[in-house]
Image (cartoon, rainbow, N blue to C red; front, side):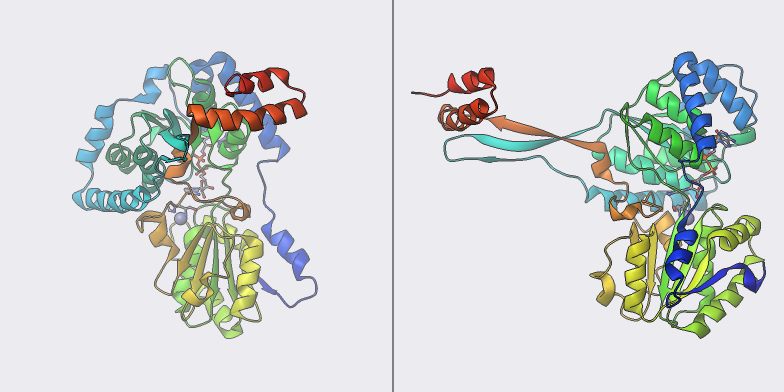
Length: 435
Ligand SMILES: NC(=O)c1ccc[n+]([C@@H]2O[C@H](COP(=O)([O-])OP(=O)(O)OC[C@H]3O[C@@H](n4cnc5c(N)ncnc54)[C@H](O)[C@@H]3O)[C@@H](O)[C@H]2O)c1
Ligand SMILES: N[C@H](CO)Cc1c[nH]c[nH+]1
Ligand SMILES: [Zn+2]
């Protein structure tokens, strides 16, 4: 990579809005080729079940499966992987799991009710979902951390059965992924991925039970499949490629910021890394650091393509202007690497996760700080939130009318029902009124 391969922009330029629009565009799930491929896969799995899952898995993940039994893993395989991994890795997974669990336990919503003077009781009952499918990506990299981030909130919510799918390209599946599944308490694990795995979870097959909700990140085929099955099952969100937006006042080590940008760039060619700073000398220094540090990375080709295609170093007037721009972009991850970051927190409206201070590397949140790393991307942080326990809990309204309560409510209801021309409603209410 060379110094001119990351875009340099200035927010004061007259054509900045057009440049920004171009920067934020990406090959989305609405791509027609992806949509038709996925529609075909969904239809085949729906009608032919396991046979179609096997066919697509062999084709896309380069496997030689002959029967569904070969993609169903026994619990003993998870436990064995947990025993096999080095103790340092087991301890790290357990430490991360503990922190993720502790954070998510605070998100549990409780049922509530209140009683009125006439004895009428109103409330909301919280119940966990029964069956949830978690998608753990595995095409270009392996993500034990995503196992924890998806499965632990489901378990904290009290989901009865957590079914995990993860692709095993070329028959390879990391022991860490299996060990993480054991630690998180995954109930069933199938080594399948892509749209065929989403279809299996949504429709059910001979081997894969149908679930109520599918959560978890994945590539465009996974995202398009989730979007297509939404309605038949619930989904968490349509997550796109990973993103980071850093705001820096110029006072942080440029190598730290460069590596924070690279940390998301190494996920995917389509990942997005953006730096906003009012300090031009600092932007220059980060550009130099990027060049030098990139060469140290095993995944430098992916990171270089991501930075060249979707990265940007943007000069802004001030930190306040940077925050206004960040709110327009609504990034998945926002790092506020400035002096006294707390003072800006109230101005931040749209970001999946906000990392405050020079020491708070986004990578710490990816693994073990505690909050979830499954976050809204591509501007959807304007209207959606991190994956959490609330994604696995449902609410039912509770209504109990005492005789006195039914009498007073019945008078209101019969009048409104007659206004709507619904006489059966009016009479149903009327029968409870003591005239
Ligand atoms: N937001 C998060 O929390 C988070 C966490 C980890 C990873 N990610 C993102 O998830 C994504 C993971 O993508 P990935 O590709 O590594 O793994 P993946 O598991 O999402 O996709 C792999 C699957 O894609 C399917 N596929 C590949 N090429 C295909 C084709 N031509 N036609 C049909 N299907 C095809 C295959 O079935 C394969 O099993 C990356 O963008 C990464 O940045 C996000
Ligand atoms: N940054 C990713 C979410 O965008 C999560 C992750 C997993 N492993 C490393 N990073
Ligand atoms: Zn990451």
